[in-house]
Length: 504
Ligand SMILES: Nc1ncnc2c1ncn2[C@@H]1O[C@H](COP(=O)(O)OP(=O)(O)OP(=O)(O)O)[C@@H](O)[C@H]1O
Ligand SMILES: [Mg+2]
Image (cartoon, rainbow, N blue to C red; front, side):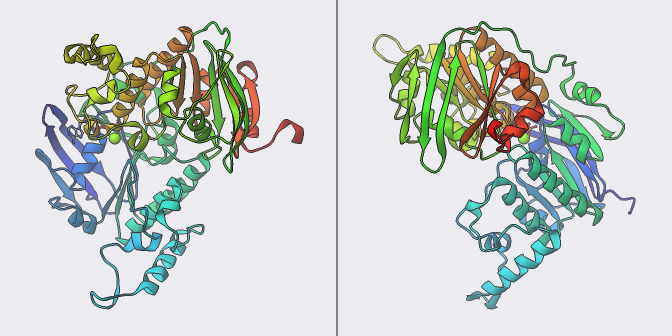
């Protein structure tokens, strides 16, 4: 291994209108290592990587790649230098085949510019997959049919086909299962042996210690330090990221659980859900556990009027209700924080204010149903403060906020509707450790106010820490119901892998 670092970014500064996103940040990456980049939501991690890969131009600073100045004026140039970024929100062309996606823009031709060598594209993809030990992806499959984990594999393969020496992964494990995550890590470790370096952004602490060699911490757009992953402790890491101690991880308060608020019986969506029944009480937090694809989100979509049910009933306060659209659901004071903030959550081109207010305009209207801008701004300001949303102002386009702050905007939106029933689907995905405990406190507080809370989470400690009762799903069915006192990882995992009591 040579002494020259693979990458040296120094004194990087980036100013967006109204925001200093990065101020004097440095980052040094050595060949064949995994480097974790950590920091709270809005710390500047994604921005730093976008500057490296030529997506944004930097305001100041230098970037040395293998000892020489890197030309980041074009994305293609950076890619060809051997740096690939796999983005936080994967955005492949879904209607393309896997092999086409890998070779897009540099397709081999039989006759130049006229006759594409389709056979070669497929064969090259096959050889590439074989080399990487990817056995379960067909080069002819449509990208849109792949799971997130498989899309990531394709992206890594693509990087390797470009002879990448540095692969950047921005929150790669936030939407994949534990098993897929271990698969990804095995692949990363193998590629490390070949001298390939990785920059890995994640909010999951255990992963950082499992996968990384070094850790660079950022806070509020500044550089805190770089540490040896083997020498820093979990608590030190958190303290350096957040700048204060975080004591309570799951601050669950005792809430009074009273009457049944919502009762779902025999809910069925052909091919997806079978005979789903459960109740939630006022003041209760009902957790939904299960593996990715178990059907938890689909249950909530059916309940919220997004999916059509073929049979089953929904009762609120003991009375049967018909919910055919989200509008009906909102009328019954149900709120739904979806897991996929980019497609079903945020209105990306709109402002933070519009995104917060969109379901609550009646609260800021006067008698003539006309919206009072003054009232709207005031309510919005309160929400931004309450949920510590990091934004230069209400008029900022939500698409410009960091991933975690977009999530906070959505939470602010739904809580403003003062729901009686709230469904939270992976509420802390992409949320940093500090804000995570804030969100947990807030969920607890809601239950304390008598709201019936349904929370889906793929993080077992979160489900176990927050729920009064846990429903476990497997392949579109409920396989178990566990009370807080009886709940532990083993019990949940058993039900989540389809083992029911009858089978034991
Ligand atoms: N295109 C943009 N225009 C204006 N401000 C931006 C833009 N992109 C990022 N920012 C701001 O820069 C800061 C850093 O954002 P960045 O996305 O880099 O954070 P992050 O560390 O990746 O956070 P997260 O963990 O939430 O993904 C934030 O305050 C964000 O609002
Ligand atoms: Mg980010």
